[in-house]
Image (tube, rainbow, N blue to C red; front, top):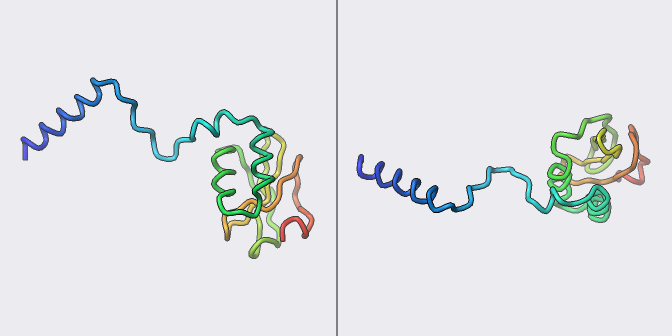
Length: 117
């Protein structure tokens, strides 16, 4: 067992000494998401709303900046309206299907029912 431990330590030291890139942390934001402008992020979310993956996109683009402002009927039952104070945009988010269903500039507490269906 001690040989296995020593071999493992030696392997880790060899990798560290080689200058290989460090292993990224789980959940770290891809470089592409960091480099996109606000306009491009909003355009991507607006263009792809109601599609699988927009919930992940929303979290990746605005991690830690979203605050819930209201809940309203829509989506597959209820949607949560999330406001981004830093950029002054509100996103309506269906938690059942994990998708963005509406995007609007400013703080919106209730979207039109046709926007969040």
